[in-house]
Image 1 (cartoon, rainbow, N blue to C red):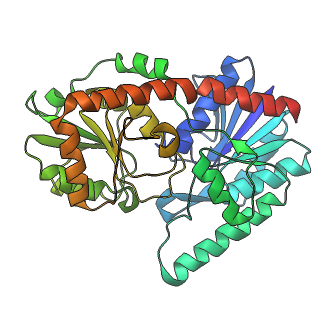
Image 2 (cartoon, rainbow, N blue to C red):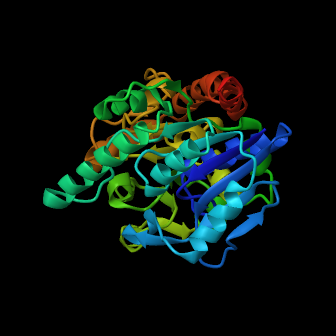
Length: 375
């Protein structure tokens, strides 16, 4: 079976949707199928290649709107040539992510014209943050319009969490089901042992320093700046923020350690060594991958009640949920976790056990394969 995955952004761009796509494509290849990923062009990367995992990748030319956060297909000869090559393949099924991108609209109707069955997976619980006033209104009108046009292609929609499925009702869509975000705990355990790094030593911190980890895009909506202020108020505590974005300099000025882009193995190693993972996001998350990875690494969790927390952390015995994202609220929550490490580790162990029972990539891909087989 050949499955084509459409993802407006893809690795090496860091993010949950990107790793979601890669994990499903990888399992398609491992199951004996063929995986094609169609994404956006990035400087220095080829337009078409087959990577070391056996995944075939097409990178279509785009306009990098919003600093690359919202790529828009660039019409022209290069796009026509690549898409002609793409559609020469005998594609059995398409997985389209997510509902808001121009590429998703194009993919849905291109598959429809060719009679290829497909599904759409959504990853958010709110509108893309583009600003207030008329700009924000225009963004919401755009999303409603694009979603309506994708829905008209007749393909079923799925959410990566129960909260995403509820949010889809805002567009008049009843989700066909949930295809949750997931991780591979065994693979993460293996990554932790690859060229091991002692993060405290690497950052020239005392061995007794309490590490708070943040992983994600360094944009205002993710709340890293408030977290940096909170961590700075806790003696003997250091915040390590892994990711890139416009808030890098602000976080460094607040005393956070911001190493920039690092390998995924380094992310895993930090989560295994940290005393706490904190995600004080205000972003319309679908089901943050880093939340799942923190649970898989046995790292105590402090986060806002974003999408996915109700499934992964259904009660206080699994993690700590923030009432709001004010620095003083974050500081108090961190203090409670850091001052009682034994209790924090018990909650972390419960979260890992729940993850292993419900949120693995093998289970998610098996569901998609069954849907594709019955289409």
